[in-house]
Image (cartoon, rainbow, N blue to C red; front, side):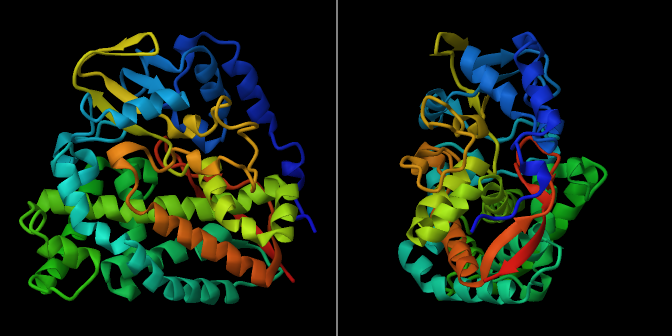
Length: 424
């Protein structure tokens, strides 16, 4: 049985999206500014990326709202840059937005080799295969509890009741953070990625003050766990590993925020994006219902289709020629993963979420090279378990109207997704 869909999804494109497509292919390239976060909030960014992929997959935006930068929109070109960490640096900032220097907190994702790998290794054990296997029953049990508490046949916000709740519970477990205070983790993540654009604070100064509260609480947890060789949570690992136990407060906070955001945004927005995608393409849900063994592949496809983090930034360490363009030393380079995952030369019918897509795992949503997301297997496991449990309980999760998207050119996600559950 196909998912019931609201009229807004009938043609899969809104009037606003159709108008954006006409605009994107009629203006000069110099007029395109894909750093405009309002394009993401209105879900009208797609045709502008399609135009750049077609006409200029490596393009220099001289006068964007975030200053001059190179847009890398082609799949092959961004993999080339992501793999070339010797000439493209991650140091200090991996976002297109230049935050005030006093608010830059170093983290291993924004460090180059060999420091990057040393600090990353200190915490990678938490998502090692053996540890993931040990957590699977816990994660499945929590998913079952959350789903069993949802109202059937009544409207509710999937983002709040399911996506945020499940990812925040997982974060609290990974950090061994006080479970009753776990909502703080979501707030700190949203402030760290959105700053004033998050709507939670009014200025970067206020954002910095809130994140200092995060540092203070985690500093106390670190003190409590210093010398503990038995614990297997992220705070204990950072507190006791030779390469991280003497970190400065700023670097400690930077790594905490990296791990919080990494554990929050990818899974949270893919949990919501998957529901939206299966409503947009009900024939794919029919296919999934008939062959639930497709769930693991569908998870990879959801992550490709959603691309929960839209971009990553690098800085050129020397002049580099890419696809006939010369990127100058010191230039800001932005790899738009959200565009690479819709590259027509790699993914056929890329705008369609196809549960049995044969090359779904080739997506670049987790990055590529030494900076590839450390927690990708954990994210995939959470999504797999969620859809396995949904299939056991509900005929479908019906989306009632268009979601509310976050105002960000970095986090590609949702704040509100109204749904109604239909029981088996």
